[in-house]
Image (cartoon, rainbow, N blue to C red; front, side, top):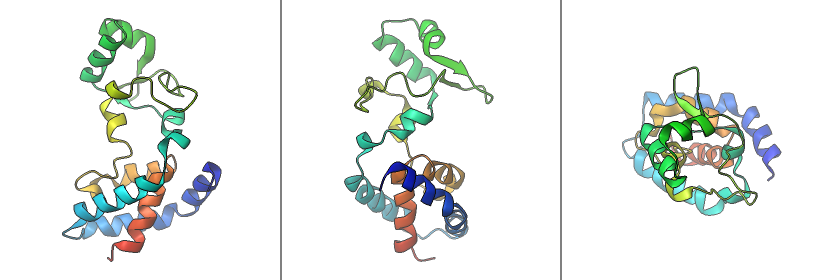
Length: 162
């Protein structure tokens, strides 16, 4: 399935996904974390992020102070220079990229700072997070960005009986 097809399906199924996740939040199964870990691994075994990288092309992560210090060191810049060159403060007063696509994404969809990437990038799309049901708003948003997130929610609907 191509990206446009994913995003069309994600938009079509958004209400259905929201209703499922809302039910899940009201009464999460006892073994949900374990089920989510298995679903996450299964989906990511068949989806290659490097063939997509839509997250890096269309959205930007939040940068913590530790992220800024680590990346500034990588580029041999002072944190203030790194901020000036790459970041801005958003409406929530968080540091985010000045632009998308991410300036650290190369033409083959590889991250040029992969080993030092921000915490938000390391954790994206958050489908293997403990107490997954607590981030429904983020999950729904991510189904419109990340084909793997869409697939995770689809798989959840098949496997998790509510």
